Image 1 (cartoon, rainbow, N blue to C red):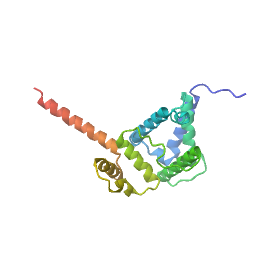
Image 2: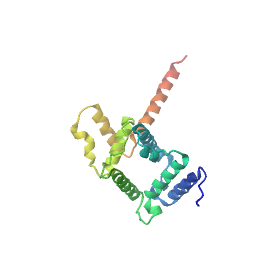
Image 3: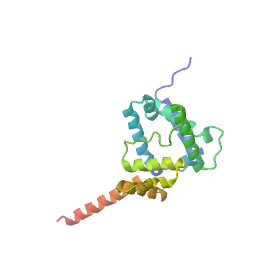
Image 4: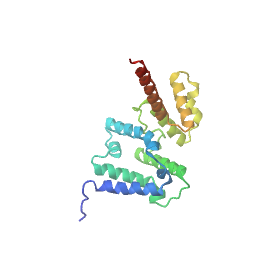
Length: 200
């Protein structure tokens, strides 16, 4: 008879998986809190969309039901999507790790849906428009979609201009959400300095 693990034991297993990835995966090894910041919003909105849709499988994948569900689900996903660490796949560096991750994720979506899906499947449209545009463009780019499609076939209007500006920021290696947040903080500081200077 197998003994059931105490609550929280899978959290320790997840810590071990994550520690190994930091040592052995070239993509994970170079990540910092700053480089992971753009993914924080995406993950939050994916969890919210799973909750709102009532899709219990998606919710379990995003949040689990107990801390052990969460840890077990994350650990299983990390092991599955890192065959170069936990399997016999060889990679040349972080870029190939990312390509493999996307291919494995696409295969998982196909297995779940029973047919090939879109690279854009699962992008939560409930997120703010700036981060939505950036996530759509990132996913499309990784799937090999031509960058010129971000021009929206010459569509006019402020929305199309903003979408193109997101593409321009990404081409410069910048995250548009983080850039706009930095500009908003700078604006706040300028307004507060102006207010301070006007006080008697």
